[in-house]
Every structure is written in structure tokens, then in C-alpha cells.
Length: 429
Image (tube, rainbow, N blue to C red; front, side, top):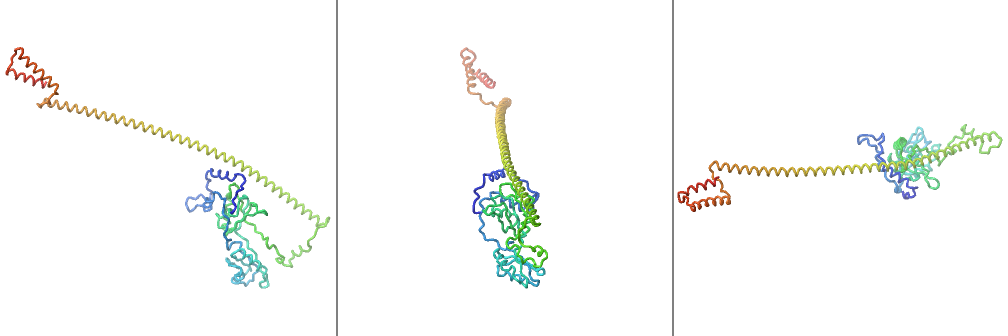
């Protein structure tokens, strides 16, 4: 699409997009509730890639597709002895042909040409062509895979219409109907290459709500009522001696004379026409009123939905904040618990270390005491006393020795052994 949609009224589309993004994912429809990969709905799978923005679509620059349903011709009044080769030879000057079908017994056939222009040229050249004293009748065949789409936004283009309905099958042509000013009337035509694709689109859009834009307005899809507005009904289509034709054509165009039988019933017909027109106008007004009411309700519930989404979002943020606070408190409690466990572990290790040191000191004392005791009873010479004790003992003995000499006691060699024995006893004592 060459022109970007810049004049969208208000920001209704943006609000719907934001609301749609905040909405929870919809439940899968009943036709898409399979359990295995083989039961995935291809239509919903393709639509999942088209849910984003659809503005700025590129205009179609490719050439028209060939051998479409719009290039298919119906040929009637064929001779009963007509062969398929002769039938193909009729169209050899109008491009390539495909899907040739001939029913010689009933005198009709179908043929599909490569382009619409060649089909129109063949129709103009061969229609009413004499063939064994009978005129051929050539017209465009009814497109059996064409649908009419209604009730969509004014911002839907040919490209968007084709992109949307291509999820149901290969689209040959998609056109949005416009008025004399080029504005959309909210209706369009979609033509598929296969009838099965058209039936699938008709069924799915009837069972579900298929929307093309942000506004939640589902489109209405129905079979296309095809009418020939090019050739119309020529005079030669009627046999000249048909009884009903002769009876209806007894009188030609005229104005009814007032007061006559024709004028009375003509006025009744005109009154009926006026009543139909008034009823149609009233019905149209009622429909437009219902549409406006629905649009107003849609706008009101849009704001309600947005407020609900905001409240839900706020509630979720509060829950998330509370959850984060609880997690933070739990982490602090866990850190305090670990710190307390580490402190208790260090105290226990310190006490254990003190106990081990105390036990080792006590064992050393016991071993020392046991060693001293075993050395005294077993005749093992004990280790010499400390120097200060030895000096004190020697000083006392020498004092007694010297005193013996000074106070006239027995002195001499005879008394020396006794002093030595006294010293020895004093040291062991």
C-alpha cells in the first residue's frame, strides 16, 4: 500500500492495541485443541504472524495472475458433433488455454484463458458467432470461489484484505469496493483459486469472529451474488414466437391515463413502492442507531477495560513488590541465621581448642609427675635440682661445717662422711 494511513481518527486503534497487548492470551478455539503437532490449526498458526501492526503495506506491483477464475468462459449453443480439438481451435488466437471442458451432447463447454484481457477479446469476437446455423453464446463463467466481505473499517485496503484472507487459501484477487469519490463503502470481494478455500473461509468466519483491524468489529462473509452488468439480456435470447413474450408485448411503453383501470392499479403499485421505501429508510435508520449505540458502548467498555487492565497491572505490581519485600526479608533472616551459626561454630571451635590445650597441658603434667615418681622408686638418679635450690642447700651445709670448727666440735676427717651423708639426704629430701 503506497500511502500510509496517517489520518486515523483519534487514537482508538492505539488504545485497542495496548488493551489487546495487556489482555491475557485467549483460549484456543475448539478446532485448535489438539495435543500433538499434527493437530495444529494452520489458519491460527498463520494468523499468529499477522497479529502485529498492519500499516505501511507495500502496494502490489506484480503483474495480474494468470489462469484465474475471472478468465474462465462459458460457451453455449455448440454443435453436437463438436470435438475438443475444434473447441480449443476456437481460442487459439486469444492466448494460452487451460482447463478445457466440453459436453458435446448438451452443446456447452468451459475454457480458461491466461489473462482477463484475452478472455474479454475472445468473448467479444466469438459471442453470437454463427456455428452450423446457430449463434454461439460466450460469456464469463460464474466464479464459484468468490466471496463478499462486509462490515470492515474504512482503513482496509486491497493489500490488507488479500493478506488477511490468504490464511484460508491462495487468493487470486481481493478488491475493496469504493464509491464515486474513491472512499471505501466497507465491502469487498475476495476470489480464491480453489472452491475449497472459499468454503473454508466462509465456514471459519461464520463460526468465529474474524477481525481485520484494531476495532473489535468482525467482518461478515457470504457467497458473492454474481450479476452480469456488461451484456445484460439481448433480444435474441428469447424465441420470437414465445406465448408469454407475445402476451406481455401486446402493448408498448406509455403513460397511464388518469381515471383508467391501469392508472388505478399503477397508483397502488406506486403506493406499495413508497411504503417499501419508507420501511427501508426506517429500517436503515434503526440499523444506524443500533450501530451508533454499539459504537458508544464499545467506547465506554474500552475505557472500562483499560481501567480494569490498569487495576490488574497495579495489583500485580503490588503483589510483586510484596513478594520482593518478603524475599528480601527472607534473605536477611537467612544471612542472620548463617552469621549466628558461623559465630556459634567459631565459639565451639575456640572452646574445643582450649579444651584440647588444657588436656595436653594436664597430660604433660601427669607425664612429668609420673616420670619423677618412677625415677625415685626405681633408683634412677633424679635430675639435678635448680641452681638456686642447690646453692641454698650447699650454703646451709657449709655453714654447719664451718660452725663445727669454730665452736670446738668434732672436726676432722672422721666427721666428713657424716656431713656428706647429711648433704646427700638433704638433696634427696
